[in-house]
Amino acid sequence: MTKPPVLYLVACAASPTRHIRTGIEKAQAAGWNVCLIVTPSAYRWIEDDVPELERLTGHPVRSAHKLPDEPDVLPPAEAIVVAPASFNTLNKWAAGISDTLALGLLNEALGLGLPLVALPHLNDAQAAHPAFGRSVALLRECGVTVLLDAEGKAPSIKESGADAYPWEAAFAALPVR
Image 1: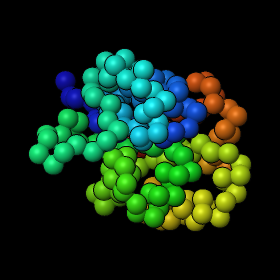
Image 2 (image 1 turned 135 degrees about the horizontal axis):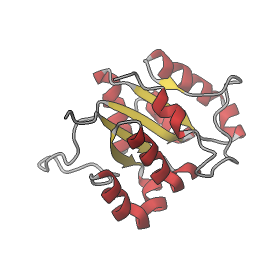
Image 3 (image 1 turned 90 degrees about the vertical axis):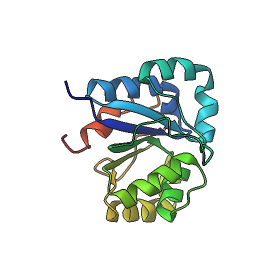
């Protein structure tokens, strides 16, 4: 029996993160061995759920860099999905900023050529900011699949329930293994 491929699910501080269990379960149903990485702000949102999420994934939930002499506790990623992807994280990623573990992994993944999918979740004012369009364009030029609707919009911030956020779209956008 072959092992399922490793997917890093990177979650930012946006309302769907409160339903990250749903995202993990949908990725697992799609055949992925899921490792959860969260931004430091997102960690605060799920802190009480971390033991259950670690049981569900079989891996530690990571939000901070390890010390240089500590071993890696996660298997290497074969693909990464950023969902929900916040305005802040998308813009920092496009700028090459690696001030969190999540951003460091995303920037390294660009260099490694890993399959990368981002499913933004932000409000209309953030989506209208000129930096967002430039960041999406640059990430796409670098090979990142940034999922927006036909009008170029991210899923509405008002649609933040577990059933409203299109987790499946992010996993379906990954290359067939």
